[in-house]
Length: 617
Image 1 (cartoon, rainbow, N blue to C red):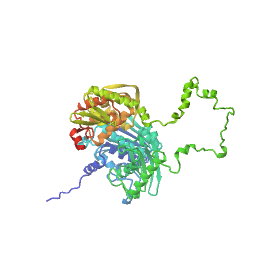
Image 2: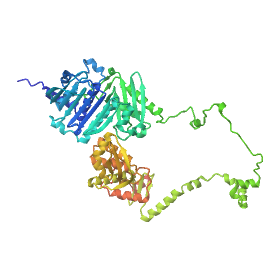
Image 3: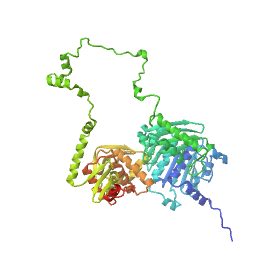
Image 4: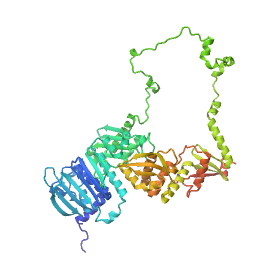
């Protein structure tokens, strides 16, 4: 029997390795940009076509490569970052494994142009499927330009598993944002299909955050800084009032490398625990500088997971530093038991000798018992002798304590009047219905009564109504008196463009207006008046992303669910009799009136027998 174990050819081995390193176009972009950063470049340009499937090009002004280095960079495990195993624990560069370029060259058509600053001519290498098909000297700018064309051209099964262009573009933008955040001292540009999406000049970290996410973030950031013997922590956190319902603006960097670490994320959320609801996620961009010998980044080919020698200490440092920043900038509530705050503003900053006592003057001829003077003091009684006598006889009644019950009834006159009118309306329509704690609706039925959650009921009504609008594409719209302009970050803007036709089917009148900007000229007629158009659109996009990530719903169902949740009647809102009756009628016209959008019951029925049993009758 012949031997059956054989050594795989390099081309096959490279394709297998590429499956770990290059999972989608965003993975290739990340590797190329990190190589450009390691080359010492301070200007990096990125060009994308067809969501990275047709072209990913990265141009930098770094150190460039010689002819030999240009050939060697496509070999497996060829790297300039490490020389021996001990170097793995002293890594400060982005790349070190020597697999990225070999993996990309195995599944794409790659063209490399590079020149060192001291050379007159550069080198151009063309490679397809790990095979070099061309090599020649070329005149090019100092630095390196790498073009990756037709990604996964020789692995069609992997190409078929890629998502649509909008989804892949969002992944590309996410990777670009992470690298750009970690390197604010580098000038970045990103062009997609001929349009400039990002233009990020050199600057500080705060300026880079504002350039990436929008000018509105200038008022949302709180600095964090802590220096210890274990780690150095710096960066920014967002104010609690600007927290969102979805993740996506949480960034941890260890030695300038983006990482995903649920344990450290919990440390930040724990610091926000007292000032933030459980279902909200704050913005944070935090940088941890740590001795490379105390971490291991060689855990996964994507290099987004790190192991630490002392996780608990790092957790405690991050939690305390974030909490201290929240308190230092008067965001979280604080108590000072050493000073009574009610008198704090009464303390004068002047020295005692500078304080001048007020002058006192009086009239020595003043007679409070003079009748003329009394008439002048009480002018509206001047010509009424009887009223003066009444006041003098019953003067003590002026100081009697008002009956609290009578006073309360007077304050509630309008409320009692409103209830009286409602009762008359209810009797006229023949239904026993009322609102409980401005949250539940109680309606009498033959066998007892039913209890309806008004918010869940209205969400169900709007959800089914919006679904119908999306299917028929005939959502009613109400024109805004003044069109509103909303600026979004690049990722949200691409998402809005992808959903624009469906959003318009719901009744929104929205159009593009320049870079990352939309104009809202109308909103759905079903969501009522006194609505903030900007908040509705932002909450719609946030809710859509949340539904897509957690529930994996279809696009239309996610949109309808997000809009219904954000525009429905909320608990605590008063409803009149006609509004309650209309809500009940519309609820029972739904296909699934008994189930809320979260799968919980909307209606609870209580029979007379159950009530009698409670009273032991």
